[in-house]
Amino acid sequence: MSKEDEKGMSLIVKTITRLTVGLILLYGLYIVFHGHGSPGGGFTGGVIIALSFIHLMLAYGKEVAFRKLSEAAASFFVSLGAILFLAIALLGFTGGYFFLNFIPKGEPFRLFSAGIIPLCDIAIGLIVGAGLFAIFVALVSLKLEPERKE
Amino acid sequence: MRILALIAVIITGAILIYGTQDMPDWADPQSPASTHVSPRYIEKTLEETATPNAVTSVLADYRGYDTLGETTVIFTAGVCCILILRIRRRHRK
Image (cartoon, rainbow over all chains, first blue to last red; front, side, top):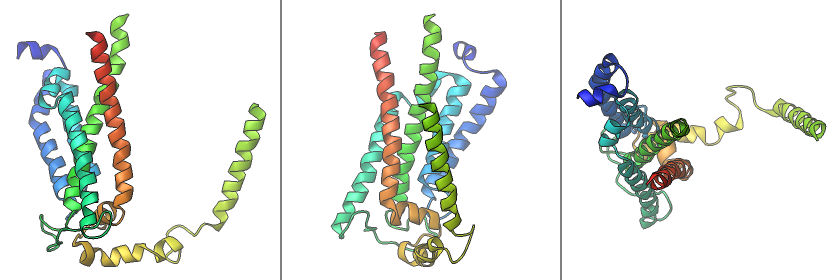
């Protein structure tokens, strides 16, 4: 820990981050998975998931955050979400048209209900979460680069 | 050139402000937007998609095509950022 203590913010911020970052990630996942039953959805949940990793990066520095979600993993999740969403859209052709809700709907207010809507939310959450994390990483590292060269 | 641009901006703004005269009033229940598709979404969401959340049913089901476009924007942005990072890393080596 002694080497990691030097990077990032102060001990207070690190302790609070260690306590809250898991709850933030869990809350983002809850919003993604319950997007059809309560307020929320893929976009908002994905943003909260990305914020939990950004929080980690702000408090502990780049290396610790990359150990949890590396750049390759982020690119993998972005692509996986996009393929999943397109596949759901194209599978609608099995019943007739693009974006048909082809899975049985089930009962309202249940976790497994509403056909393709939860699957769409998960795909959108993957794209938004990993995509916003990648955008943040690019902004941070592109800002720091020119200062180092001088 | 600047004066021409200013004139163009003023004329466009004036046309837009003139156009707002024909817009329906704020939260008018008789406006076209709230008499055509909105009531249908609100009334049929629960039986057609089994979703109590009308916003999600519109985003992911009725207007899924629109959401596909939105996610394409974010996907492109994320992939471009990853590409930039990779190019920088390769240059450093």
